[in-house]
Length: 263
Image 1: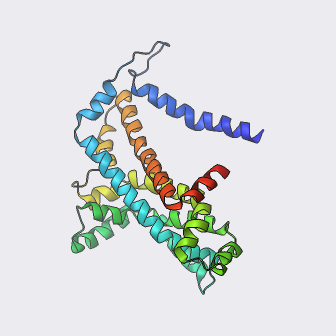
Image 2: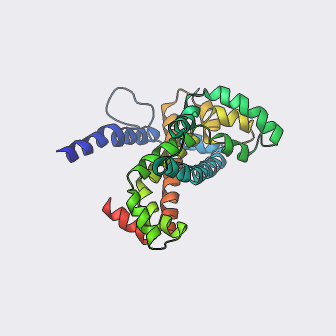
Image 3: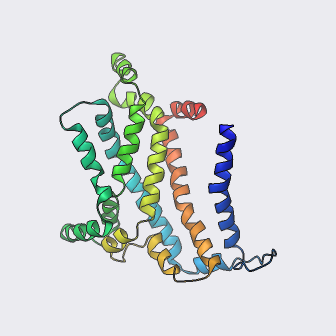
């Protein structure tokens, strides 16, 4: 019963809206009546702008870079918060979540001055760094929950068997963290790909990402064009997840495949 309810909910809240968006991207704006006029005009308008392909590549590259930095920083921090005891641990965890309560505009304006002084303004590296502000707190929180589900005795057995730090992480921790890592990458890529204010201020118009190209289209009342652009936008997180899954398979190897079959 619960499984059927889950599938029905997915159909109503996820699959149906996507199907409607896909249909709208290849039809003229809907009017009264059932007959639909099929057209590729929306996709033609979107890709007439040569900057769209460039912005998709730039957005995907920056989003993956942000996701990688998030994981490199988030894994050891999450492990320490979950499996270690030290003074002011709860205070530190709260402080790591404070960027979520900071207004984006305030963060952008404050960091812009720093980026100019460091020579990182109007560069993809500066945009990547500033995208860490709204993403790292989510990564730490998600990965901490993942580590909370890993018994410390299991990690202790690896140390007893003389497993090195990297070997223990690759064969024990990483396979068990796969669900949390997937969630973290999806959140990180989605948040990074959707950043307009941070990218516009730090990138200064020199770094073209999808939001920079997308928002001017909002002035258009053409539903067909907007639907086509929205579908193109969704392809970025999808591509990032596919790339992340491929990398995880290479790193974790058989352990990843076994964990995937269990899930």
